[in-house]
Length: 84
Image 1: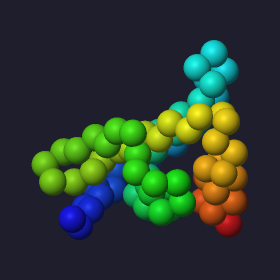
Image 2: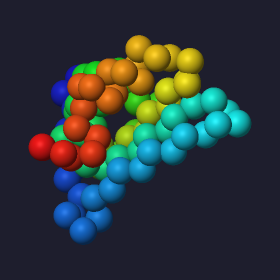
Image 3: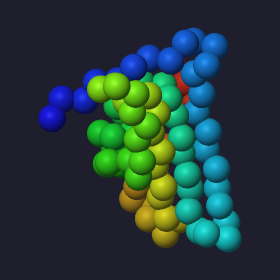
Image 4: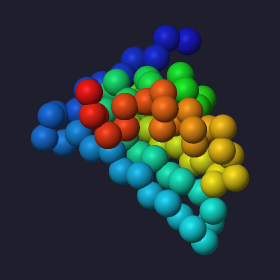
């Protein structure tokens, strides 16, 4: 299935990273198309996707703090902080 992403308005683009210590997981939400594609490629399917029409407008990933492999891939293979 071909994935169609809808780019949000530049002023509405956001990425939120929450570390939930009690639940022992990291939650990442983004509506930035490039980051959604990078995260999908690096760490796999999101836990949830928001869809409008046929387009994906946002995704959320949950990574257990014990999953060091996915955490490393997320930090190394994606441009979470847009440093480049």
